[in-house]
Amino acid sequence: MITIKTNHGEIKAKLFDEKAPITCENFRQYVADGFFNGTIFHRVIPNFMIQGGGFEADMNQKPTRTTIKNEADNGEKNRRGTFAMARTAAVDSATAQFFINLGENDFLNHDDRDFGYAVFAEVTEGMDVVDAIAGVATGNKGGHGDVPLDAVTIQEITIDE
Image (cartoon, rainbow, N blue to C red; front, side):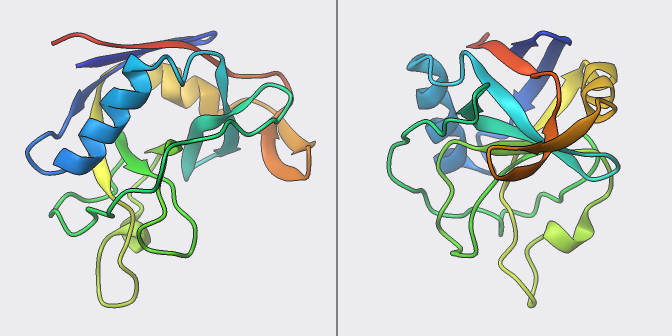
C-alpha cells in the first residue's frame, strides 16, 4: 500500500507488483529517494485524469533517472481510480510522472492502435480526494496548460508494506 499525502488530503493505493513489476519497483525507488515530496499535480483535466510526480510548484521539472520499459500489455485497464505511468510519444519513455484516471479511459489501454499507458496501482481509499483535486481551477503556467491555479502539492508518499 502507498499513501500519498497532499494538501487536499490522503490517497491510499495498492500497487500491482505482479502485473507491473518494473513499474512498481521504479515507483518504489522514487518514493524511497523522497523524490515526490514537494512535487505537484501539475496537470488536472476533469473527467480524464490528474497527473503529477515531476514538477515543483514553480513548474521547475525535476531531473529523473533513466526511462523504464512500458508494461501496458499487462492486462490492466485504465479504469477510474487506477494509476498509470505518463510517457512521451516514445513507448518506453516513462520515468517518474504518473496519473490517476478519473474515468474509463479505454483509449489509453494497450491495443493495436497504440502500445498504451502502463497501469500499476489502484486507489483503495481517498477517491474523494482525487475528485476534489479534479475540481480545482486550472490555467496556464510555465508554458503548460491545465495547471492548478493554487498548487496541489504532494507533501509525501510513503509505502506501508
